[in-house]
Image (cartoon, rainbow, N blue to C red; front, side):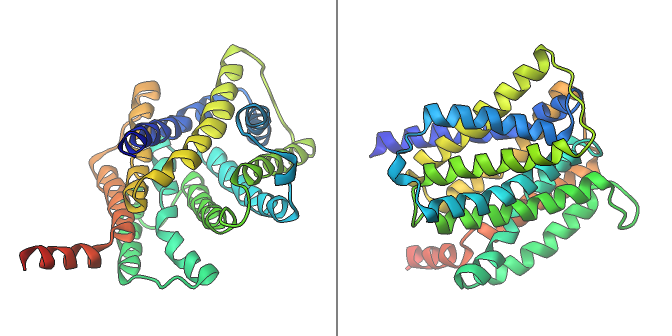
Length: 294
């Protein structure tokens, strides 16, 4: 059991690193390929990889798993396309940290979806997150640029997708749901690509970007998450995923030499803190302290 837990820690950390690096690769990809086409090709690569990596049997293709996969795929598409387009108009750091706001939306969605009680700390986390969001955008007044706004809606889409995964994977095969969600994203983005002006410059850099995004950032990272997250404490994993935007910031500096000023760094830190406030079980933690003293 300890070996499984240690292996899980390592693989989840690897997953967070891969996801954190994806923002930079997307920003490189949109230099050579239009947004909808980039998402379509990314998920085409992901589907091919999933067919080889995931062990999905014909009996797993139930009506419930297909419908769940389609529903999740719709919001997965919205999350990725909004995130991809946002990188055209704002910094990698802004997109990464604002997308991380999905953590504070989840308790409210869980309440409406599963009637899970909302903690008082969830309300406080929203206030902290809004202050952080204001500082991160680095503007005077509430005048977010287009990229920041799109990243915010991307976070909302990802939060719906995550809650839907929590509900549906309890009933149906997760690999089957994942595969159909990939197919849904591919179909929607491909369909829109047909009716919009799309550009693509096929070169080695674009192919490498698509391979990395499709195989590693989508199929392998999600596969590692589904396989090893169950061995770890849920709260710890949630906090560990908050390192994703920090890693994105490191990659952005290394590749594009992007940097954030002091005010933006404070805003980014407040967004992380808001997510910690939302996820951390303060009540249970305080009770344990008193028990330990007694």
